[in-house]
Length: 375
Image 1 (cartoon, helix red, strand yellow):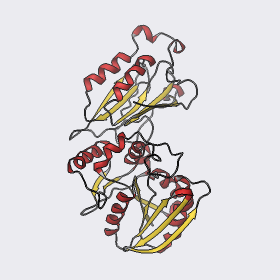
Image 2 (cartoon, one colour):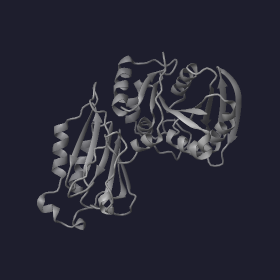
Image 3 (cartoon, rainbow, N blue to C red):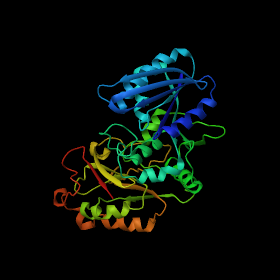
Image 4 (tube, rainbow, N blue to C red):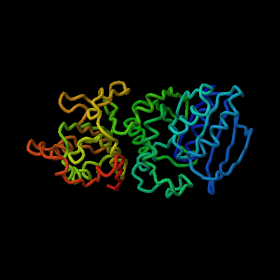
């Protein structure tokens, strides 16, 4: 039995997207899940526009992942024998990746995920990426402990989904210029995805778990290839390690105009560790993801991303090196190259020991260090 998953940031885009998908699949069951305050989960099932089921449950430990595990998976298991296609509308801000793994783990071969659809209002995407509030502060989730920003959720969903459904909320005025700009940004951020509109014929992509997972690997860099419209992506590589203090000073300038900064770093204060960096809107963070493949003396990392991983196996350094991608509408490639070039170690500095360099990011404190800040 095939299941289509729909993730979203808000209920309005989700509603429009599910209505469009249901219209293309007569007889399909549309299952809405919502997590409300005090752990109340509301489940509604519709078929041909008619509500056929309503249920409620209270979670002892309310969170979005528990909602998926304890309510979404059992509901799909129960509805599978109906023989109808199932469209699952996840609670707003629930990660589709979490839902896919939970369904496959809970139902095994009994379920096929045919498409993972991210529903959004394109005119709001850029503002949401730059919003510094958490999902809870912005009212997208009732879980106070959820400290993700809207931008973090959006980028993750755009990476994992195979389809982006442009679903303008009903009764909410749309700014045509902002909508056009939002569509161009989505094309730049999710070049792999099928873009389809909720008005007219709805096309969906095909879910491939391996490819979807590979796109979300920390530090992996992939791009749209040839950019169009106001947004572009610049990729820069630095062979030698970065001086940590010089890079710390350059980071704010590097991230300033970027909707999305991502990649991996070779930092002189932790030369044996692969450091990933990600900047989404106003937030930038670094994470120590463990040793480089060259440190393990194993085969080089091979990406599954149809040749778009920018990693190259250097004859001397192996997979060590800095690879960064910058996406925005005011990206100056020459300025970025100059800033990063100034951070690269000199010949004299290359012979210095790692402990002779400052460690402003505290990358050596643990093997899993995450440093977040507003840029």
